[in-house]
Length: 169
Image (tube, rainbow, N blue to C red; front, top):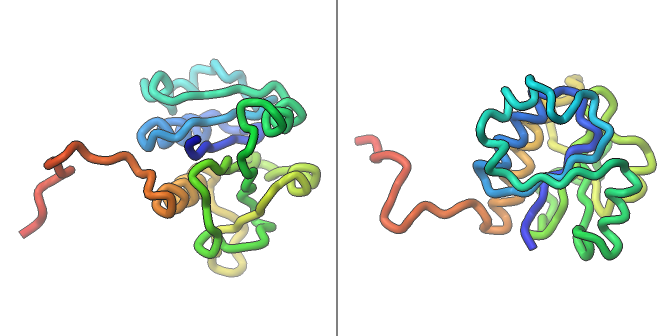
């Protein structure tokens, strides 16, 4: 089983497209918990995701209840639900991610409701400067997915002998 990113009722197609593009590039599957605040086939959503949408595995869940059902005997059975929230109980840098975790990002406008918090196996937060409300959800997802993949040693590997660029002299 591999790490998954889940989006809870996303509001903004551009943020969703950005997270899907990131997931495609890093080999992370995505779950979208509907209803979304836009049609999932919306042109802005496709524009933000560009041609990367064809490279990411996306599973859509028609409701929170159906998403939860997937954890008990469905496609997500045996996995932990890790909720990213400004009301997190532990800093993401102190949390021990597992390679099969499902990281749930909340709505841009409202985060996740109390019932989602209650269902979580863990609630994590990205520490930030006091007095500031929150990071953009796509930026937060990138930080958290990066840390989870780093801990699990699950970043995509470069082909043997290749580098992304020549080292600077």
